[in-house]
Image (cartoon, rainbow, N blue to C red; front, side):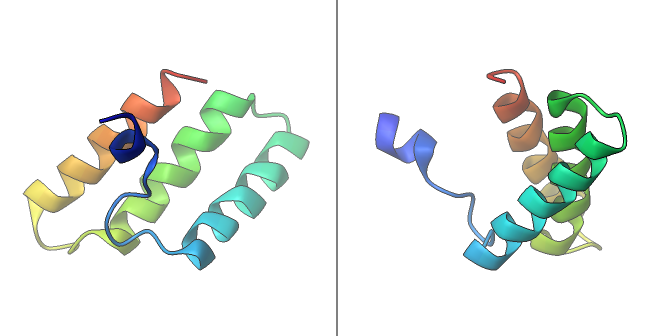
Length: 72
């Protein structure tokens, strides 16, 4: 189960993770705290990952982002 929790969510590519990290770095430089920067990047990336027209997909990816941010 632990390795499953460490896996990238389906649809999140290495490129997507790099883009999120770069976005986080920029927003932190602009004054965001790390948790807020991560949540903002994750919510934006969730629209890219999920089918934008499928509410369940968007909600699922956003729930994963919130769950991950709780560990920050």
